[in-house]
Length: 306
Image (tube, rainbow, N blue to C red; front, side, top):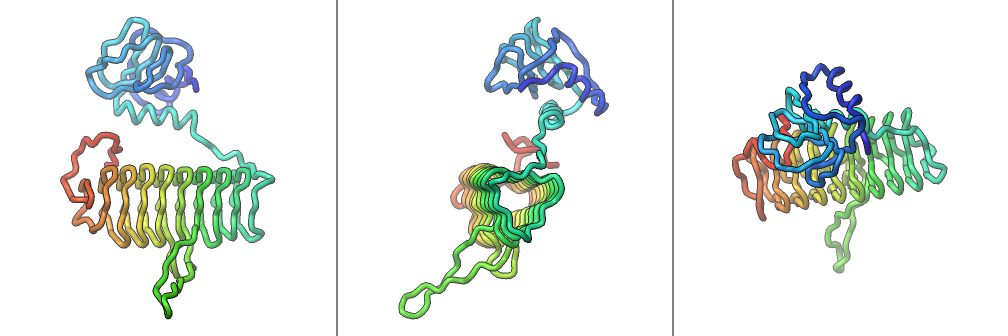
């Protein structure tokens, strides 16, 4: 994927972001990561000690980094990572095509908004889909599900999956409780591939708040309440009726015990098993079982929500 120098500068000018330029400039650049450097790349760098050897590349930064003569530096006022992401989001954001595949199966009573994309072999029950939402291939959206506007649901997700609740009956038989609730996913969420959202058990809905990002492989239990601007990394599992408040960051493979409640601005380290409610907001949880620690302002890989 390429971006032109002209596009980069135009974005900075349009957003009134102050910047200065030094070094060599080329017409087009490949969008790259410093973890995988290539010649003629466009990168961001935060810090002062720049050690990566680059050729004919452009670095977006806020510091006076030393570079080889055939590279360029755009020095910006503000966080270079945030500005870099803003540039890419502006030019490369995934937008709905508004096309509905002929192989998709859609319930006659489903309410489909304006400019909704529904890809091949998706199955939609009696549900509501908001404007500009993207439903990728092989997604299943069950009855009594509501998906808001500008949501992206990646392939092989199930919205409104049926959970299992039962008790022992007579003669050692299991008596199952029918699952009667629904799912509500608010606006501008992202749901990664192969994730399952279990519907509420009785009269409750499983809810995901606005602008929440869920990476692939999540398993969200019945009646779970996830707040706004929450980030789930890969393969997170929540037990039924868990509550994760706004602006939490949940690391890979974290497991929540049913009915636990997590305060806002909580960061949970990868692999933790959360079995107790948090005592207050802005804590770090790590370990098995997870224990509370004070949260640092500079946790690696965690967005600065504040």
